Image (tube, rainbow, N blue to C red; front, side):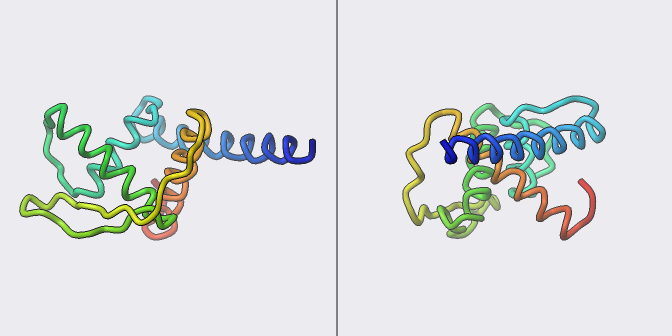
Length: 126
């Protein structure tokens, strides 16, 4: 029973932190993004490509880059290098945890929050 109470507290904290991040995005861009939109923005940041239009395939690749970048914070991936177009490529270092869909989303959200906390620590407010 204690474990369940701890998990509720952890999820409450994650949710509160997530809502704060969403508020910052609303203040900056005027609308609340979903996880996929945030991954897309992180992918653009990591690729450093300010192109106006991306193909559907490129958008998926940008989100993949974002996930790999995010999970490299916890040692699941490491940057292996960049191709001629400047796209980063990653090497998987360890298997990802076998989580339920909700746990996977929370795992990813936690890494997104860490990513933006690091950016704010380094460069200032979002």
